[in-house]
Image (cartoon, rainbow, N blue to C red):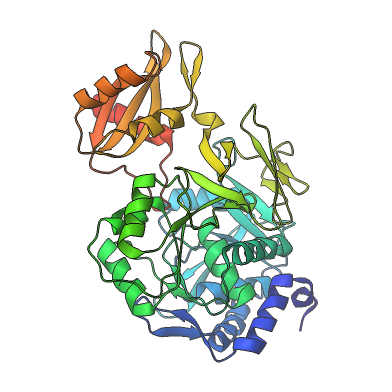
Length: 459
């Protein structure tokens, strides 16, 4: 055993998992076949190690694999060499990958080859980074950056997720959210390595295929996105008797989707709030129906300091990252403290997400919180979801526009807003769609939606 293996607490946890579960199934396919036992992950990790022998400790290695059964072994192999993994989404364009690797000072990138092995591409200009792991994020400024983590911080987040949500080695995680993103890594990959929680490796997002996968694998835990749960709630399906815990994160979950899903499958969707910078923040652990956007109370080991006047919250805990790359922003992240850009409201049922500071629309000097308008629009019969964003206005600086998914007319929307909102709060235009165009993470930034809207208006 090398000194690096002794100093990394995730590797120590993995050894304990191996001692308990060596011959047990660790990774299943979406059809329910065993893709890897824990012993096979270990053997694969040992085999991958030789591919990184020429990289110095502290070098950053990009990992662009997707939800692949080789991914956990690759993490173990990199950590054993003292290298710093930075997972990359498989859908990233080549120029975006190059920009991310350059920003991190990566020495190499590893991808799957045509067989069951890996292909390592060396890069020039790599530099040593004082970290065990990097996550890509836009941070609080919108500019691409990375977050530095120690292995102990990743393990603390894993412990908080498993202990708060009641996830154990007898469970089976259904792993279709991207493993390269913070949500998927914290809820699927580290519980496998650090706690021995098996996972289904899949990336199919068609509703019928998801339901078949849940049924065939007998998965008990399903971390998903609001857009996924919305589609499943609209499907006809046989019961899923083994599914006991559904977790929604990435965007607020609508009350209509939560109620319809519970009525169809008999399982409550629990709201979860987290951030790349600190992992899990809050979780709705109860069985009762909560207000829309409610994410419950602080995760175990997390302390939240809420300023009711500003709506901001400070996150304190052992899972908070070390800081940003390439430039630190110590007023926001560091020393066990993180200040998200989200606005939250405290209620008897827990914290409720109420938008982001950067989302405010400046209407003739007045600050409009688009999340407040979206809540009102979802009250209208026929509206499934809504997102409000700002567009430039020569007279008022910005004007609000509403993108509305549902079976409703612009006239109905306009009448409701005239009767229930102040004139300056009412959207100038209503863009009606079948479904909001969320990305793979269940997100769509208001800025990106505004660009799509303006391109439609000015082809």
